[in-house]
Image 1 (cartoon, rainbow, N blue to C red):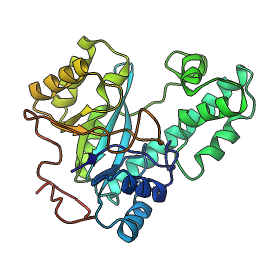
Image 2: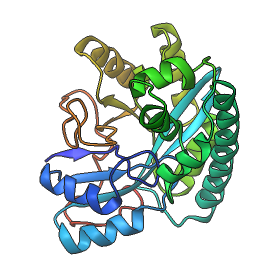
Image 3: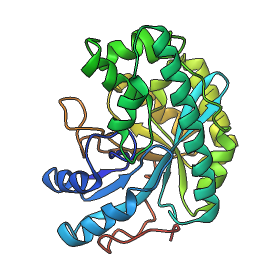
Image 4: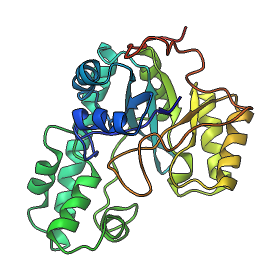
Length: 288
């Protein structure tokens, strides 16, 4: 069974609409897919409708990826098998969306001081009905201002400590974990080696995430080599965290593709170990 529990659509910083993502999942023969847009669940209803009509064999998991703060780091927590209509979750996400809007305005102001005028309007056009993210600003810089690549846009302007970086006032990890679990979901620490921290700090992060009630950790995702994967798996085992896997898919590419990051471990318990995956396209609300 091919399982991918981390993907994005145009409702955040993905390049494919929910319809296109479902069609891509079918092409890549994905059996279980979680859509985890940044701080929004707005694309889930469309995706479920399309899956029901076009790809009924797909097990679609309702999810979200929430931005949080820990120490000086922005940490992402994926919520899996959530009740997307849960009122506390939706109230929380509205607050997150307002913070994203406030950050976008400040980023645009800083980029204007760097000589890039009119970026906010262009970034909004890329975002469409979705959440505006730093990736939309990177697209503007690459497509309109001769910045050579996404990586260069972050390295020079948008990354941590750079000229147009803006620190959003994200909530603490414990708050995000709590709201995910109130909505019947499981809270998973996303792509833990991507936070530009030392192994010592990563140990602290995972320990605190676990102590605050986190359920799982991604142990398979793009950009993780064998040694780091072994290290992350050892942290999962040490703190009794469930194991998750996902491509963090944003668009078709050489390095990221739906269904490529499979979990194979006889030591760790998968985050989906007690989900009922026998009913195609079912909406999983709570563990069995």
